[in-house]
Length: 76
Image (cartoon, rainbow, N blue to C red; front, side, top):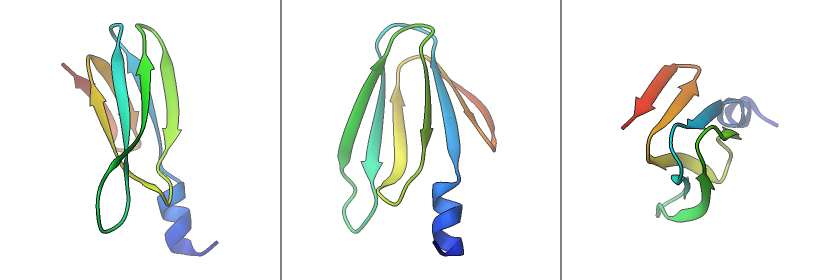
């Protein structure tokens, strides 16, 4: 594994649902961005995820607390 891949694969983040029905959607890398994976979380559920060579972005729909190495974000 080269340094570039270690940087991409090293970023973990935590999403905690603050209400039922929070959607977490993974978006692909590459020339065309597409939705490729969806999870639904209920209040109190926690998801620990990681950016990968296939995942370039995450969309969170619903009220959740998102923790990354850059800080904490609370979505409305």
